[in-house]
Length: 111
Length: 112
Image 1 (cartoon, rainbow over the protein chains, first blue to last red):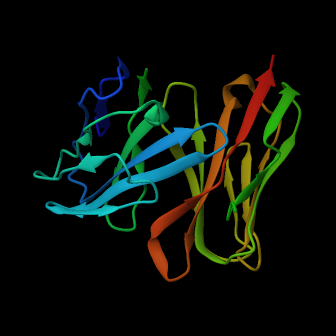
Image 2 (tube, rainbow over the protein chains, first blue to last red; image 1 turned 120 degrees about the horizontal axis):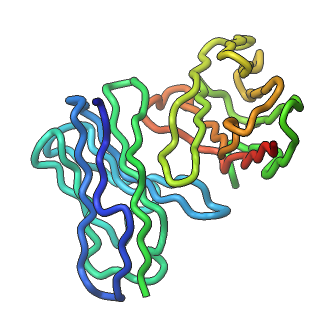
Image 3 (tube, rainbow over the protein chains, first blue to last red; image 1 turned 90 degrees about the vertical axis):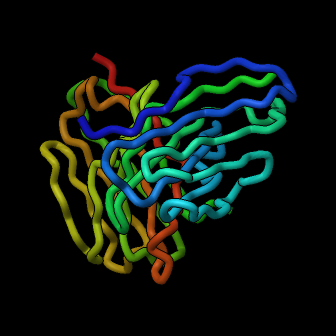
């Protein structure tokens, strides 16, 4: 089944403790992206990647890192999480100009 | 400033009623997409409209792209509880098709 898989689905952590949210897609898509979704602010893009080893900042990149060493994986790294990064995170992928396929989300709480 | 304004923000209706939700902008878009997001899941694409004045139908859902490609509407006929969810519109700006501009969504609840 074609899908975008994020892990974990839920994560509660403390301020400053580094964490990684994984994202993997099995559709051989070149483009991958991370979003956060917050009430009243909607979906905001954090980082995106046009292909392997090519990443770029989205609208809200501060406090996040990404890497794209392989086509299928696009992990989101929070080196020192803070409470304002409490949010619902989505990974998405697509072929160029194609339909965005989203994962089922990761709900992160930073205390 | 939100480039894509969706209205209403919240809508609660009874099963069988009709409804229309709107996605408006002062900017021109080369294409506009509608997604539905159910609780605990990611958004799922419903339709993409690309031509001004275009109307697309998906069973009981009718999507329209404005003539000037600045706005869009989604009409649902005889709503069912399974239509409950967050409806998001997202537009690709002319000249920058790589980046999608997202609306904040309309949260629809259809009560049995």
